[in-house]
Length: 143
Image (cartoon, rainbow, N blue to C red):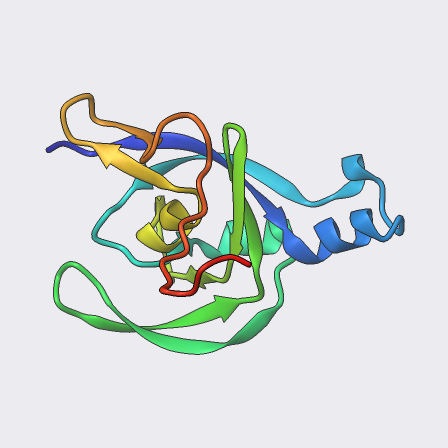
């Protein structure tokens, strides 16, 4: 399968909270629309330093990342970022990869939006159709 790109919008989650509280106007929220690689081999949302700065994301800490060439790299982990794809959205922290040239749309944000990569059409699609599902597998019956 080749490289699959998709357009996503990233939004500072703290700005989103301020909008909800009426403390910030929607048009003043820090966001960026990017062409990202839908990377089923990456767990996290991976951004570069420039994107982190544009979004004004705070840093929560560091994590060690194993990259495709087998190297371990120290990366910053951000506060949550809202990730939007078409009519879906989720929030998750991002990993800031030093010198990253591309944005990676990993499986955690894709799963959060019930998305998958279709290997035949080589595009991002809804895993269960056009509606974002929330599957909660439990043995507890609803009341």
